[in-house]
Length: 98
Image 1 (spheres, rainbow, N blue to C red):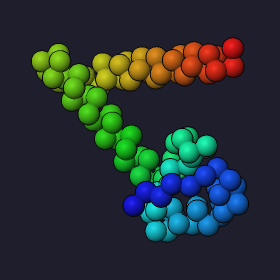
Image 2 (image 1 turned 180 degrees about the horizontal axis):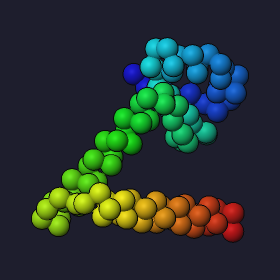
Image 3 (image 1 turned 30 degrees about the vertical axis):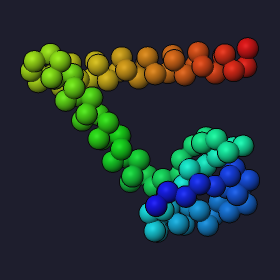
Image 4 (image 1 turned 180 degrees about the vertical axis):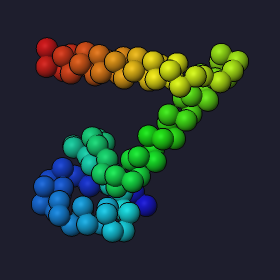
């Protein structure tokens, strides 16, 4: 079960929260002013989510192209997606500060 906690609680109980994530596989949504800000999950769970997302993306692309991708094509597409996401993140942060 995912528990919602405030940023203040995270500051006060970080050690306890990390133990719960590592040992009991608890997950937390960290909120600021009642709005979700980040998630605290185990490194293992994060890697599972990343693998799943990569597999889904590759399956989608293969379906769109009508056949499997080579390793090189998959790498190029992955790097393009990373660049796009980073560029988009920088734009969003500029709008907030500008």
